[in-house]
Image 1 (cartoon, rainbow, N blue to C red):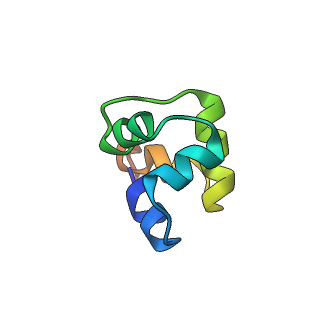
Image 2: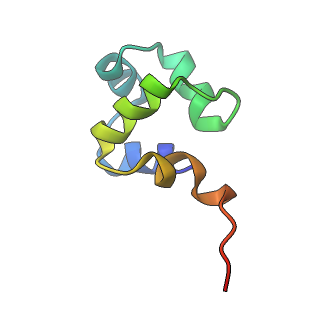
Length: 67
């Protein structure tokens, strides 16, 4: 996942992002590490905050591309 990279590129802390989207910093940390999935609502909020698609933020590494 690219969540931490996107957060850092915006100059935001985990606490700032968590406060903006209404979750705890601990929950965001686990989502960024892949230890927690996060609700669809949380994924949408992160997508809007970072200006990136949900696929890009959460699933790009898992999508198989065909030639």
